Length: 108
Image (cartoon, rainbow, N blue to C red; front, top):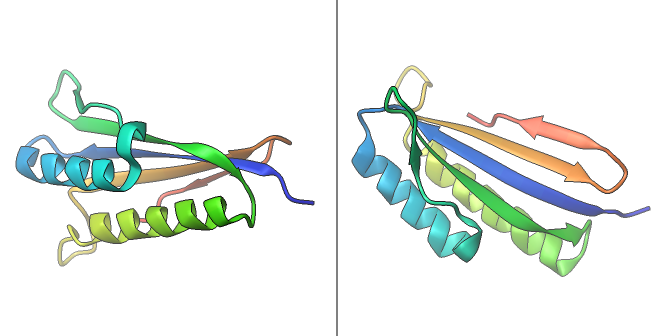
């Protein structure tokens, strides 16, 4: 049985990379439009934004479109990786559906 699945992405960056955060935020806005929050800075300088995507029926064309965009965004964030496999971004991708199934992925 297929269910409506929602996905959300939380993106956090190290304090000294403001230019890169703006670039990632702009890329997210180009992909996801109004589903991207403004950048929030915490008291010690880490910057975070949230991508909330509309739920879609698993396997539907809309679901496949969201999956493709999520993959494109993840690849973009991966491109900021360092030689030691660390990254200036931390990315969490959360999936949850109408029957309580939850998945949390940290792809970096």
